[in-house]
Image (tube, rainbow, N blue to C red; front, side, top):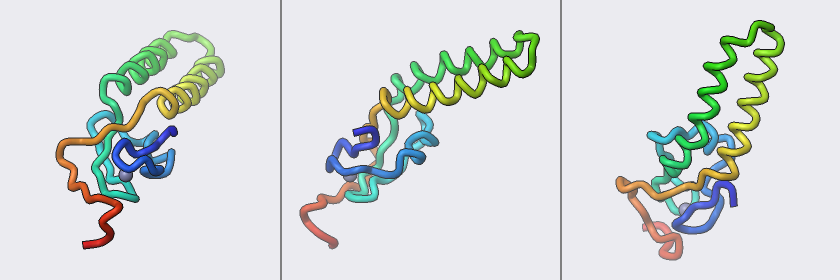
Length: 103
Ligand SMILES: [Zn+2]
């Protein structure tokens, strides 16, 4: 699952939320409340090549080609980020067991 919670196995939050979740940020699973973040090392491994492409696009003399490269870069970044970067629990979580119901 692209955005499955490693704690409860349910969809933690919408995919767009995961795509906007950087390596330093976290968000709570909407089912179990576990605080989740993206796998930091894998997130950086995906983002660094995309950042290098953005920097490299500055040297492309044709603006329309540079814009096309940037759009393709962002699309590829989002797809690879969604598929290859898993969610992980964060240490500051306030977990509750979904089988225990509301307190
Ligand atoms: Zn969960």
